[in-house]
Length: 244
Image (tube, rainbow, N blue to C red; front, side, top):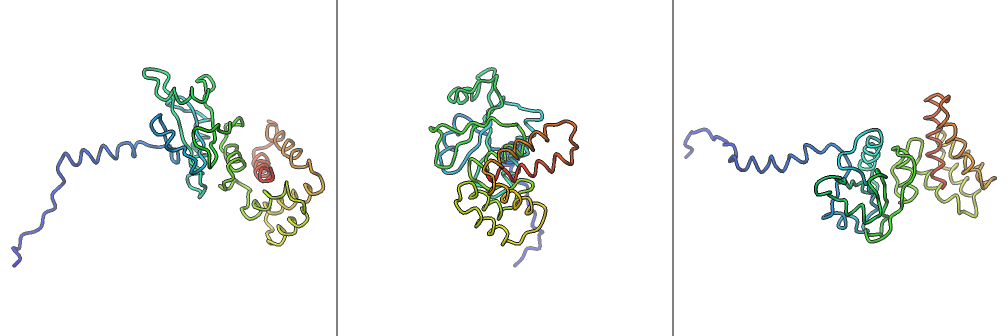
């Protein structure tokens, strides 16, 4: 028979609460979404060839515009379905100089921070990585990993179905057939129209992609060009990168 006494849920013992708090503390304090922190105990285990991994080598507590661009890039990668990890190796310049040995292993000097290295799928940490030397901007990082690692993340202006055709364009013998394939998709928005325009131009002129890329980059770097136009040119650069 029931005793009639109310069931009282007691709080867990204080030592249990302490353990939970310790486990949660690193998670709650971790604000760099999509970035996996590596050290000399985890570096070789994570970069094992099972997926592409891009690593930033920087001072232990990075900040500023370049850091913000890297965080934005990593967040977009993390939210995508791309088989790619974005990782940090934070190097301490004082005390025990944590992770300095990893930077030295790849001949990276602290004066050159931040540095970025990409290990492709199939390449472990014992293999030479691809060195990134472009602009330290989110879209530039995205273009780099899409081109070199062959992953799809999707930059502003890019269309996945047309992107797949664009990647075959450079080496295709039958470029006319690819143009017809793209048109058959029946897309008519601004982005789709630009893909088709590029395909038509590139089919007639093998050097069009490189010349148009240089022209748009020059316009973006021009201080007199309005921000809205620069955004448009940036979207077009993203499309052109798919033909590389």
